[in-house]
Length: 53
Image 1 (spheres, rainbow, N blue to C red):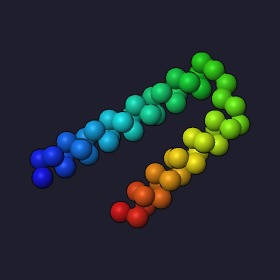
Image 2: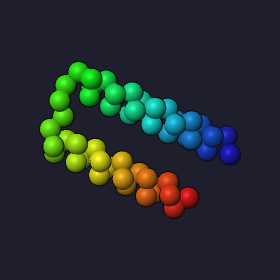
Image 3: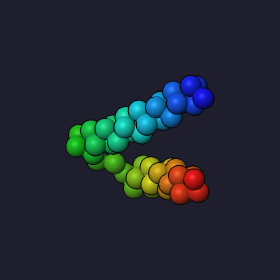
């Protein structure tokens, strides 16, 4: 059970890092359409998994 809690904390930290990195990137450079589509696809897949829980 302890390992599971650490794993969840790591996931939350990673999600926070993804959010901060995305904010930094959109402030400092322009993403092309393909990059935006790739990010959107992966975020949609994550949301599908979370919605199944």
